[in-house]
Each structure stands twice: as structure tokens, then as C-alpha cells.
Image 1 (cartoon, rainbow, N blue to C red):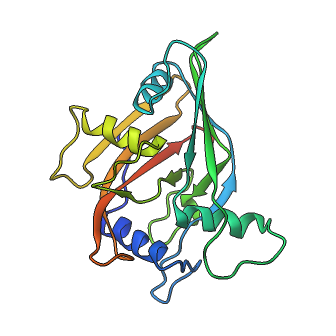
Image 2: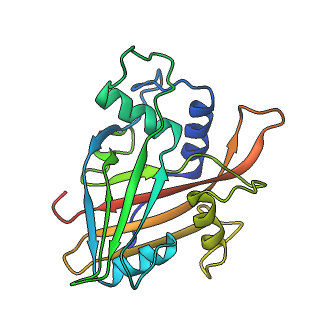
Length: 211
């Protein structure tokens, strides 16, 4: 089952806001960045195996990865936790990471957490029951070998990659209990540098069957 996704223009706008290190819960135009929450989401069965493979985890043995959240997502987590000794007000929250853990037995399962954005609190495109998090900006010419760049290179080798698409990559998986998870890659621009850089954002969106 395929889900609706954010238009590419909103992704680009989000990168621009993050690059300026300013992220307001509600903008003058009425757009609202979603709230962060702490939640573990579990996907089972063949869907877990497929997502683990795309994320570079072993699909036959216990494995794990740590994925850094994009700056906008990290700031939303800070607004949730306020966990620094001195209050931060400039939009640059501490780095945050989601842990992705795969277990092949007794039933294949993939657990992702603890941080998600609640898309039911986003405006104007509210999506109750959907949760997501995104990568930092991934420069098109980066030679980094960090986990997200490895995921991006893997997605580019997939048959579903379309350099001219919006998004460039989109694939969804459903587990037997009805949980759904999607991996998308969007073209984006980083306006904080001169000249501006082309690159990508990877977004993982989950729709647990019971929210």
C-alpha cells in the first residue's frame, strides 16, 4: 500500500529553514513543523527484512545501526526534552540519533526509535497516525561513508531510483500485523553555502496499525 508524501517543495523549504538554524513551531504563513515524541516502532516479517536490507543491516543475523536525525528533527526533539543545562534558543539543538535494530528470530523484526515526528501535529498536511524522521542534508558530491550516505548510495542502485522523479525514490512495505513503513529520497538544496549545494534528504515514515 502506498502512502501520500510531502511535496518536494516542502522538503526544500525545510532544508532552507534548518540551514538558517531557525525553526519555529508555527510560521507566519500558518505552516507548522510537527512535534517530536519518543516511540519505538516495530516492523515484522518480510517487511522487516526488506527495510533492514535497504538500510544496510544484515538480514540473517542480529544487527543494528545508528542514524543521525536532520537538524530540524533534532531541534523538535530538543523542544520536547529541554535536556541541556543551559536553555538553547537559536534552533541548534544537540545531535540526536535513532537506533535501528534487526533480529531474524523467532520472527524477523525491525525496531526503530526513540525519536519520531508526529505528522498529526503538522500543518497544513496533517496525517494522524503517521510518524517520520529524516536524515541530515546529504550533499550530492559528498565522499563521506557515514550510515546515511551508505543508505543513499544503496538506494541509488535500486531499480526504483529515478533521478528525474519527485521523489527520486519511494518504496513502502507492510508487515503482517498491518504496520507500514516507507523509505523516500528527495532532491534538496542547502542554501547555507555559497554557492548552494545540491543533495538529498532521506525520510523514513511509519504508519503503525494502532497509531
